[in-house]
Length: 97
Image (tube, rainbow, N blue to C red; front, side, top):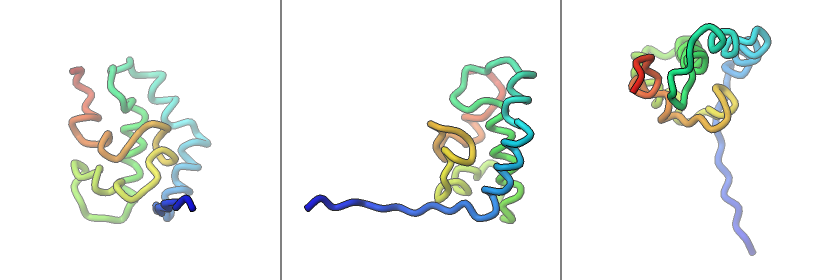
């Protein structure tokens, strides 16, 4: 018998916030105005992750974003292929590598 491994992740109120961000096209609007940085996380995605972190009702500094997102469905909240570790300050920096 194959054993299936299940893992749960939390959305809390952030799903509603992402719904609003998607409705207004936050990521797309920002990415249209900013040149591609060549990083995995676009500027629009970095801004949306900052908004979500700020509305997370935690008193952690923003450089701890990967910790904030570690138990959340980042691919649904930010974008497909993005992981919590990708939301570190160094990875989201606007300075090209």
